[in-house]
Image 1 (cartoon, rainbow, N blue to C red):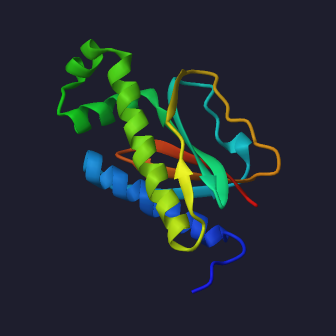
Image 2 (cartoon, helix red, strand yellow):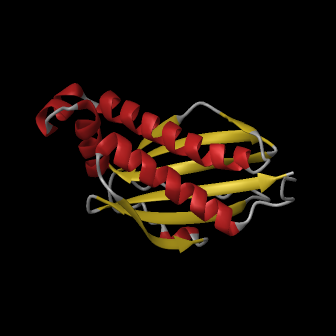
Length: 168
């Protein structure tokens, strides 16, 4: 089968939904449901509460970056679920435990997304994850990239996948 010349919006959505759902189910034993899709970055407001952002890029026939934007309380909850720790143990362990877990969640999610691109003829490789924690955060658009923003509900929390993609 010949590779398509472009990556369709449907492929992007199906790939990120499958990747987020697989990681949430496998790692946290929580279901994740897509609740909103947009290309409008102003709809993704991370200014009012503490968030942890994980990002992993991919390079090759498809180039881009995926940001996972996770509220801090959900990131701590996820760390406890994944590591088998109580909320108190997560808090006592410090920020590094939460950042490590968000890095792993991001790496696995973007890896699943990337594998879907590779499967249809867009081979690419991942970069290392970067983690940022804070409030009043924003994701800047990359010039000449197509942006897709997906909002998920997982265990009553909002997880946002912000994908910026450029094909050569």
